[in-house]
Image (cartoon, rainbow, N blue to C red; front, top):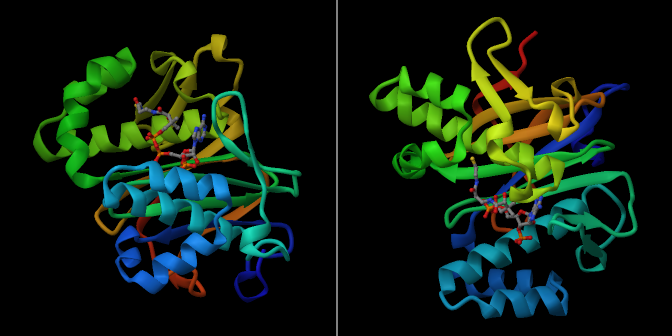
Length: 260
Ligand SMILES: CC(C)(COP(=O)(O)OP(=O)(O)OC[C@H]1O[C@@H](n2cnc3c(N)ncnc32)[C@H](O)[C@@H]1OP(=O)(O)O)[C@@H](O)C(=O)NCCC(=O)NCCS
């Protein structure tokens, strides 16, 4: 994708997870530079948010996507055009072989970019775990809940956070949002695979189509779902401030599944 990070081997396609921090936009010159790469519609959308922290989150997400994609193709950040699929997933228009997906929180925004295959990503702050445990009966499958119920304390919170981000990354990779029933697919922990995806036949998909990873960064759990093309290892890149050249950072304990 970019000459200075292109060390993924001859037969491996690049896979990049870009990270940026909405608080960098507290610096006026950084916020102005980010606004300048958005189109009119995106600017209006940012300004519609009532609270400044939500404006920063939205601005950071869109500015990060545009600047990150420009490392993948010789196009300026302003020049990218997007269309939404029927469920609101932004896609590059016209298609250029790159796939991307975005996720945001108040403290961290991420953009996952791959050559050739669909991707989905989700980021959640660690402190959301307790709230997620309370939502478990509504959002997790019976099999996921049964596994969750065997856990206690910190382990239970950790599992809930992983389940939520993994499920969200799957529905985002499929591009179908919550029209995909959350109880019809499961991430089951344990065994040789480490984590196994099971999908009900009604969802017309096969677990073998996907590989996925979990990692922690800057106080957040991140799940990335990647269609099984010949993608290389995931590289974690930080743009600080947003729009600055990326710096490669190491991801604490990144784990890919299924392991076998
Ligand atoms: C639409 C949905 C993708 C939004 O997720 P979210 O957690 O609110 O937001 P995220 O920060 O992860 O992602 C937002 C980004 O996803 C992208 N997105 C929107 N619709 C999408 C879709 N159908 N598929 C993939 N990506 C989508 C957009 O780029 C959006 O950012 P933008 O509006 O700034 O461009 C959807 O998954 C949803 O509504 N989830 C609700 C939460 C829930 O109940 N999850 C259950 C998990 S067990």
